Image: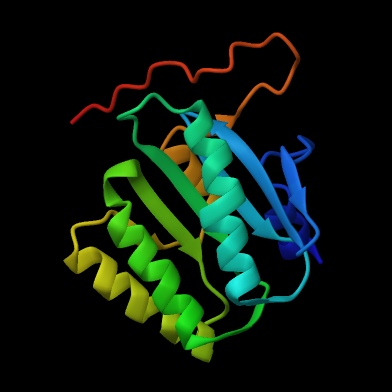
Length: 168
């Protein structure tokens, strides 16, 4: 319960920006990005892919400057299954949209699962394509390393992310 509670709330008590009936909660971040968490056991399937590359991607891009790259962290530790077609579809989509991402992370299911092996295959393909993609065992450390904080949801708050400069 402690591990799931921690992963269900990547930003403490801050409620998600969006909740999908599929069982996915999403938080928009600054610098601009998105963090998703499977709030209950669900499969990685076409419905999830539709939500991620359709509605959710559209909401993030609507806030981005035309050439602005964003972050994405997806906690799929509650995934129950996946179909190879959906994995391939998501992998191809990330490759096609690689210019839109600074970094992408996925929290995979536990070691030894077929789902984790599928995530490792996707990682290999994406890294060969030059995409900063990683399997994440510690989501909080990943968020801190990239300086991601929850976006201010208050009415009247500046809808554009603050400038973010990476240092070498």
